[in-house]
Image (cartoon, rainbow, N blue to C red; front, top):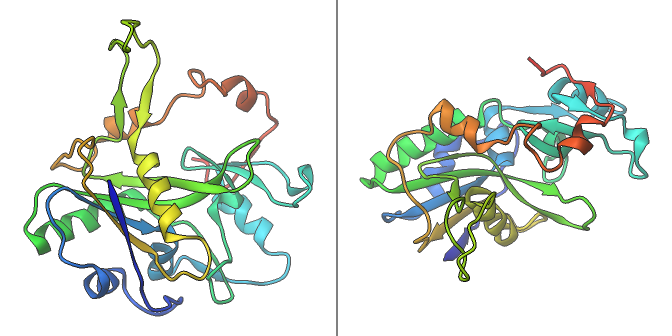
Amino acid sequence: MKVFVIKTDKIKPGGQALFYILDKYLPSLKEGSIVAITSKIVSICEGRVVKIRKDEKEKLVEKEAEYFLPSQGNKYNVMLTIKGNVLAASAGIDESNGAGYHILLPKDPQETANDIRRYLRKKFSIKKLGVIITDSRTTPLRWGTTGVAISYSGFAPLYNYIGKRDIFGRKFEMQKTNIVDALATSAVLTMGEGAEQTPLALIEDVPFVKFQEKDPSKKELDNFHININDDLYGPLLKNTKWRRGKSRA
């Protein structure tokens, strides 16, 4: 697998359109490529930004989160939330590289991933193409951030080992490889989190990826997420005193 980052100019709120950025910076794509895009530039292009004002972030987090815990519960004064089936800080709202704005997550990242893939397939006349919109997250009991995909399109997100045998003949009972988040982590690692100005990455030579010409169906998207009752961490999550955010349907 090869991951190439793509440097851009500074992308600021009120500036460029997303497809203009893709046209300007993406090189010619070949069959079997996966394009990774940070959620931040998608949100900036969508206008999903709010000018930073004192004591406003917690209200924004409550509005954007599905569930949240008050910031007083940890030493960093950061709200732990659930947003889009991801356990994340501050419902993904961030100020870094925001030019004085809070950057919210994209309005509909799945629709955007599908639209980007459709556009790029047509532009470069290719069939096998994947798209990932990435964000960063923390891992419990570990320092540092890693990548996560908040949406994907164009390939199967999981490889299922259940029923297969290991090298000694033992059957796997619950093992699945999360391909999409592993790719997102590789992309986020190479794109960086600071002043690199590399919000795009191109992933090539991924023989383990099964490409699909259609958009992910609702059933496929639902199957990518694990029900809390089946989750290994379910007892912890269910016994936490979450508060409902305003984005909860």
